[in-house]
Image (cartoon, rainbow, N blue to C red; front, side, top):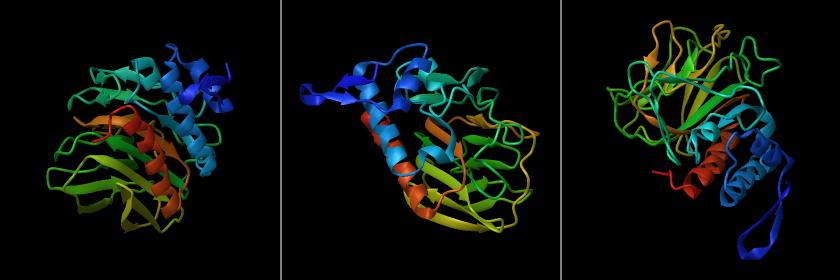
Length: 258
């Protein structure tokens, strides 16, 4: 399969990465969904972002097995632990106590990861606005809660004990943390550079990323609903905005945008 009938009755030649991804799904997507997937992959490739990613998951999928599948490669299919709730074309929602998605991605053991100490990024799309709600993504040295009970973003990116803390009155939408320097990292919220965070980088802990929680010594669980998440190498300010725009295109197409 490398072609699909698009709107107007014409045939669209699919990206090779789309064909490989669809073959990895246990449950085949509909033709309409394949078209949306292909548009998204083409957009990421054209923007130079595809090769910067280790992992990309769209939890807002037709069925759960699609939601857990890494778009970038055959590695890092997520595993459900506890009772996070899957909702078709919306995503996975944490249970605030034990449920999380185990990514299998450990930056200290992954073969030749894009995500490194001084060139790293992660991001997600939250469908939940409210405060509190725990940590959406991460492990000990890289994690983010887009709106705490104190109405601030808290985040780390290859960073030790200290973290970013900046005012946030909306926990929904796209959020990206990214670093290309050892001396600072940046946060983009909903397509706009939100803040620069001064601070020397630190080596990642030997632990894997979780979704709907952070894999810390004391895990931080979330009640947010996540539609999308990604992990990769360092991004420029423009690339952080672009990856949010392109992933939002998919999210809007399936009706998950808030």
